[in-house]
Length: 380
Ligand code: SF4
Image (tube, rainbow, N blue to C red; front, side, top):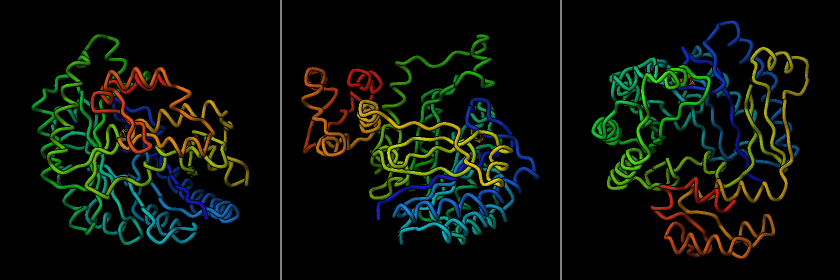
């Protein structure tokens, strides 16, 4: 049996955050019921049949969004129970549910855990009310803290806190207040991403109109280094450019993506990577529901990656991991000897102390992480 991950997309939110370009829609009751019906009665049995026929075993399930906890508790509970019952799962399957503060009370959280949720990822983003308002989040810092405390009190022993830095007007002290507050709550995992403002979002329009400016690359670099050093000093291992965990509590689902493992995506806009083919489902909730009801395919795009694209992807994803790229694995998977194929580039990067090679792994140094995009571009 080969391992695989399953992602289930819940595209509903209470309201759109100002920086968000994910496939998520303001919640409408009727759509939610039909969507969960499609997932539970059609998508899960279809996935179970496919995975069994291909001798795959599910090592991780990730219910993300959107805001999975924006929907009524009964829907999410049934989805969780059906997932763990229908899919061919391993005994120590990691089941993560994303949650946003202000959407689930203590009884909702207990229900998630009772139905099979084992890891909860909380979209805190900041413990500063001003930043939360700027980002258009529905919650404040007090609600974020309460949410964490409720999840812990319900018995969850594997909690992630998501944070964002780089919000305009936020000082280094403001950011570190968020990071220190997160550390004081002692989650098992912390993700810290720089704010990105994609085109088409409400904040992008304001940025273009000159209403605010973003922090400079130098400021961002200083903040990044301070966060990294503080989290390391607090006992968190940086295992990916933006992800930190207590030893042994890395997110296995995301590790599988970064190591180029296989995964299938259920729900609208979800992606899959199976048998060397990458595919993506339709974005529209209504279209997804209709196609599922008719027994039709929900895939709207699919491609088989060429060898060159696979090697590029391996470099791009592998270098984000602090463990780096396994050179022998790459040779086995793709028949490429990277040290020879990119000899000049790697030598120059090593001389500049941006990468190093140790025990079969090519990895970024701390300085290399700060210019990761440039290093990756140089190697691909
Ligand atoms: S909660 Fe997440 S998915 Fe929903 S609008 Fe905000 S950023 Fe987007």
